[in-house]
Image (cartoon, rainbow over all chains, first blue to last red; front, side):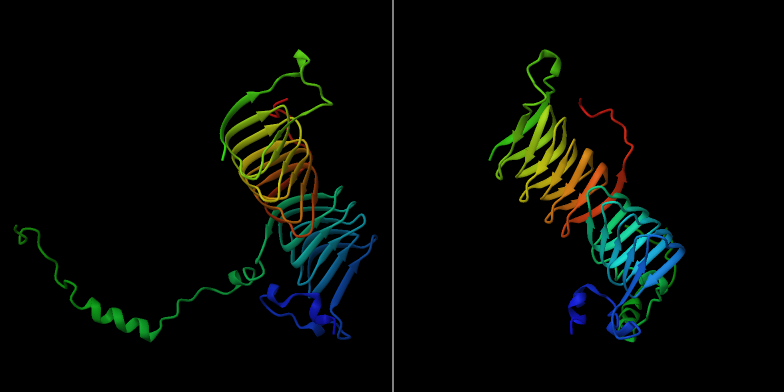
Length: 158
Length: 135
């Protein structure tokens, strides 16, 4: 019931199944103050970090860096990123739709806000030009009158 | 509309005793005002209307919600509520209000971004050179 209100559908390029959690609830992952992650993490849902992360985070929902949470690495949140008062985010790239940074937070990186979600999958698929028969027919007719034989320089008098 | 070609190198230095730190001067613009050029000001600036160029102040800069700014901004506390395009340096704190739209690189000591604000650019926090601050 409240599932549909959690994330506006218009923000999501690829609709995330709401029942991605084990019990039909949206995923919510918490890294506590004593937790530590080195590497990459992709979450279909929300992520809350109060521990230490060295690596790349991506979540289809919200990411919150709270308490004394420290994140060193790129962060992508399809919805919202919150950096709390005592939290720290040192990133190369931060891609989010919404951003809240509390006074006192440590925050640096290249911030891109907006419809970045649609851009992310693009590099994965190679761009193959599809030749449509409809388009191909038109130039084939037009190309015909082009000079087939090389015109010699001296033959051209004026 | 007032067009002020401001080349006000008006750092009315503190040594002549005219300008007191406590009673800072305020350069205040209205919604219909336009500032084009370079303003170096010993005091605070309230920017509204349209600003293009460069604004460096010893005090604070505050950009009103209806303002459109395409300028390099440098001040102590910088508060943005309107639309800003350009580099922003806050020697102390930069605040982006909920309707602020900033595209440009920022260099700050402290940063607060309210939900709803839009930021596109590179954020650097902490250690930055204090020269060229017009002080």
